[in-house]
Image 1 (cartoon, rainbow, N blue to C red):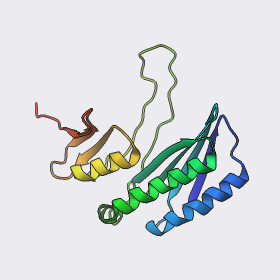
Image 2: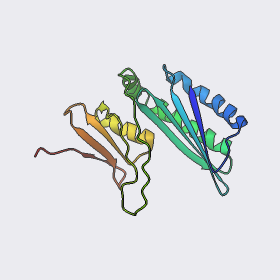
Image 3: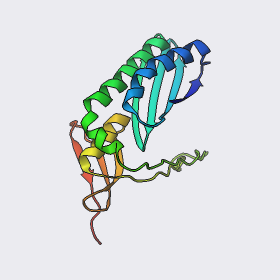
Image 4: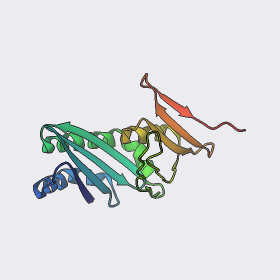
Length: 174
């Protein structure tokens, strides 16, 4: 595993890095490649937030937890990731056997005026079915997810509705 550490309003010490590497070892058995793991540690007042994102073969797994201790936050985040992967193991196995699709991000573009586009993000849109897109959205913890529908070949967006159900946006022909 390639682990990157980012500290926001705090310093990430070597003891934390060693502990995190040890805790993440239990996730290695699910990946046959060398996944990239980003760990972001944020300190706000008395709260230590740990966000763990695992990138492997175009798939993302993300968990974020906070508590008054960063080690506890890390433990909770890793446990959530483990549960996500185990719960969705069958669906993920067929996805992992697919092609590797890299994700490319553009740097943030800062803007100084209100109501102005402040960030542009570019990425490869993966081909998948609606169920896989919902799974991916949930694993990332996002409210929406853009993908190329394997049945129609069109760009679609799935989203979480306020009633905790899901919606699908499809383009209409002109």
